Structures are given as C-alpha cells and as structure tokens.
Length: 133
Image 1: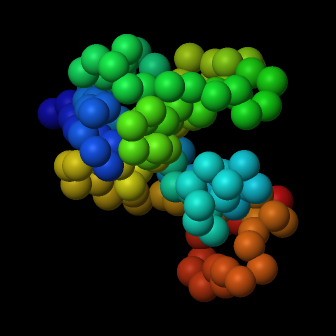
Image 2 (image 1 turned 180 degrees about the vertical axis):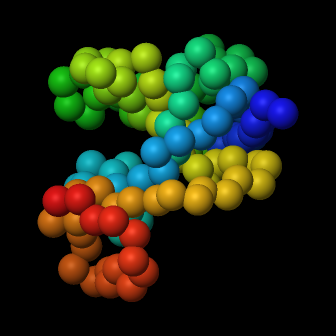
C-alpha cells in the first residue's frame, strides 16, 4: 500500500497531496528556520518533488531564496511556512514539507535534530533523538 498524505496552510488557500513515503524527519534549530516559523525549531519530512502535488500552485504559494539555492515556500495569504528545498547537490530533486501542515496522520519512526549549536537558549532538548551540529 502506497502512503498518501494531505496537507494545507492555515487559511486553506494552499492544499497539497504527497504520494509516497515521507523520510528524513528533522527538527531544525537553525536561525533561518527559527525566523521562518517563529518557533524554537522547524520540523520537516522529505520526499522526491515528483511526489508532491499542489492543488493550484499559482494561487497563493510564494517563494523566497533564503540563501543561495535554498528556497522556502509559504502561503501568500496567511504566511504559513510549507516547504523548503535546496536546488543544489545530492538532494536537488527532493522537497521538505513542514510536517505540522499535514492534515492526515503521520508517524515518524526515525527523527533527528539538526543545527543544535544554534538552538534557542530558552529551549531545552529533553528527548534522545540524534543531534547534529
């Protein structure tokens, strides 16, 4: 059975479907993710870009190049952070999805933290997932 997930932004202007597995669940603590989400970290899962299907990408989805080759996409209406991708390197054909925007259940058996050296000073990591600098 193939995995299928549905998701949307806060206002519902952007809806999407993922056909296939979501992998590499990462809780990123970098300053760009903190600013982009307004939170201590951002949680993403990745899939090949061909697996992501947007209902109408021209309606409300906008993008921002936060660093060379790295694109973050969000809803123009409500500001929900939805996706990011690095157009360069080994995973150029993959996209990362903000998993809190999923509307269907998702269980992440493997998870890891990334950029913990930049974590917010007021946030404590209390579980035992692998931590990358």
